[in-house]
Amino acid sequence: MFRYLLLLLLLLLAVPPTMSTKAHALEVVASIRPLALIADAVMAGRGQARQLVPDGASSHEYALRPSDRALLARADLVLWVGPAHEQFLGPALRGKPVITAQTLPGIALLPARRLADAMPVAGTTDPHLWLSPANAATVARALAQELARRDAGGAGLYRRNADAFAARMQQLQDGLHARFAPLRNAPLIAYHDAYQYFEQSAGLRHRGSLTPEPEQKPGARHVLEMAQRVQKEGIACLLSEPGADTALAARIFGRQAYRVAAVDELFVGVPRGPEGYAAGLQNMAGEIQRCLTGKP
Ligand SMILES: [Zn+2]
Image (cartoon, rainbow, N blue to C red; front, side, top):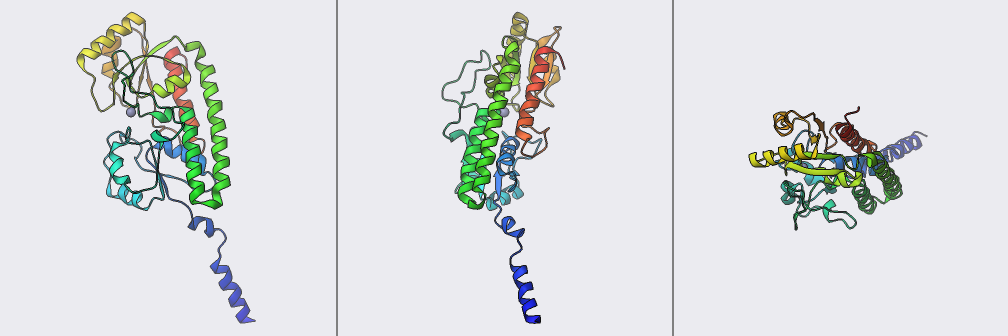
C-alpha cells in the first residue's frame, strides 16, 4: 500500500500541470514599448514580452547595458523596428532569431521629410512606423506566425489574438478618419518629425517640423522660417513631446495664441497589457485633437 502511495506521489510531482506551459514559455524581447504592447496583445493568455529600452530612455540613441545583453542572449525571439530606428541594436542581434518590422511584407514605409517644406527625401525611411494601426496589425500577424512556429501549443491562441488585434486596428483606423475629418484643413507643425504615420492614418495637415530627431537642436535660420510660416498660415498647434523646449515654442509663435500637444510617441503613459497599444494611439489622438481645436 505504502509503495503505491509513494508511486502516486512521485507521479504527481513529475507532472505538475500548471508548470508544463511555464517551462516552455518563450522569451520574447521587444525593443521599444509600442512593440512590447503589440506583443502583449498577441501573447495574451500565454506569456508576456520583455521590453528592452526602458521608459524614458531615448530609443534612437540607447547604449545597451550588460543586463540588456544578457536578456538578448537568452531571448528566443527579438522584435524590433530595424536599423532605421534602433541602430544601436543591430550588432547585438547578429545570429539571433528576429522580426524586423521595417522589412516585413505588407509594412507601409514612408520616406523621411525635409524639415523646411515637408517634401519626401528619396532613399530614406521614416522610422516611426509603429504609429500606423495598419502597420501595427501587420507586425502582430507576423509575430503570431513566428510564435506559432516556436510554440505549437499556443499556435491557435496566437492566431486568434492577432486576428482580434487586427480587427481592433481596423476599427481604430476608421475611428481616426471619422474623428479628424472635420479637422482636415487645420494645419499643425511638429517639433520632432515623428508623427507622419499617424498623420497619414488620421488625415492631418502637417506643415513642417523643427528637428528630425529630438537629440538634434533646430537651427536658428530654420526656426525663423517656421515662425514666418506660422504667421502666414495661421498655424496654432505644435506637436511636441513631454520635456521638450518650451522657450522654442514661444519663439516660433510669438504673440499669437498657440497650443502645444505633449505627444507620447512611445506610449509610456499607458500600462502594459493587450489593450495598451490601442490606448496609446487613442491618447495620442486625443492630445492632437485638443491641440487643433483648443477643446478638451
Ligand atoms: Zn523619433
